[in-house]
Image (tube, rainbow, N blue to C red; front, side, top):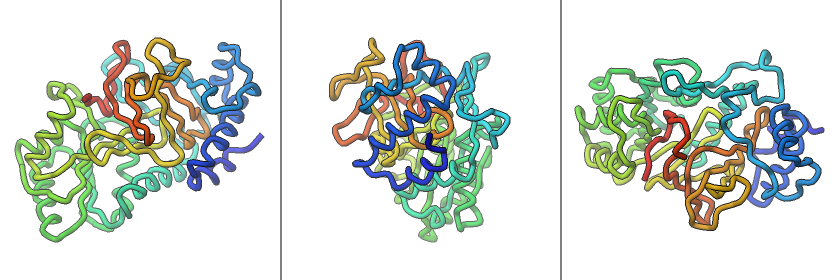
Length: 330
């Protein structure tokens, strides 16, 4: 049986042609090494040896991250655990992380694949609701990005909208590359109180009103932010506690994944059958970075898959818990 280090040495060199073989190898490993996933496969009456094609791999319902420790190793060995925000009284998901440097390298590789070196950016995190709790994977990621920035003014901003606005203006005047990543309600507050010209900046919303504002459709939010900051497009980040990788939208809500992540769309009334091309269905994700948990996740997001492998998030299943990241719908 291959060890986790084998897969860690492979995924950042993954090609579209090599994805299927690596995913099948990881499936065979996790089908034996992950007790929760193994039990799920047994419940389905499926023997791992029968799986020869990617389409045959069952995706683990994301709810298992709430009820069980989805991991191949004892939780006591974890370096940390990421937890979902959840709503008051709701059970939260847990994702145990055993190799923090690997997680950080993964997030860096994905971002820089689409945007270039983080050291060149002034990085501002406007994430008040996430900063007010512990265990956020988003905070861990942005904190790493801030540490990689060569700009000493990079950092988190809680309620200091005036100070952030002044810094953004100064960086813009100096010709500095700007990454402003924020939760939706906080970005809208900044747009209302401190509109300014940020043309050329990467303004990235992570979704979610956190009960601070009325929920809005994505097009409304993006239109308000574009007008307030003189931007042609608004970027988005798609991530969740249960995944160690992220997808990014460079505009219009169409998300791109790195080569080690592949998405598919299942039928809404049959989780084991794929939806027809172009149809909206449940989003399944294979994240090869989930080496020590489960790489095959059945999410509760509704999505539409494009022929080139990009996808759009259309909403959530009616019975799904509201989660704080990427709640904006079309």
